[in-house]
Image 1: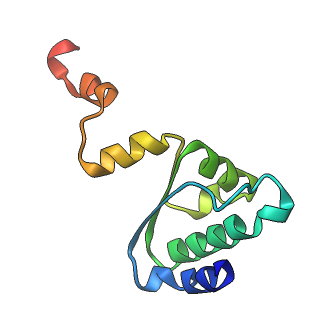
Image 2 (image 1 turned 90 degrees about the horizontal axis):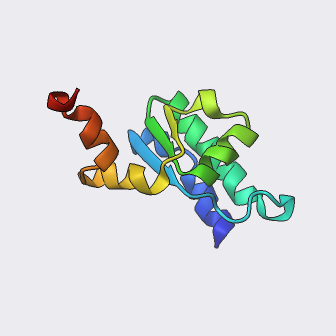
Length: 105
């Protein structure tokens, strides 16, 4: 169940030194559905404090991070959810490729 999963997420900074979170845990904009996202945000912030590198990816997750005033408690916040995942997969992003091509500067 969700509560058990959230309890298991506590202490992840001791196990996983790099964490990527892309997508909130439900419709966090409504208080009745915000508990999962709030709890995971707390766990990610605790992991960062414990020394993990934490990356928040995606517009909705970045908005949740801002709403919970946690932007300075994680390693990096990106609004590029899909693009962030593609970059981590090793895919070439057209915008990054164009900026990286020094011959065109």
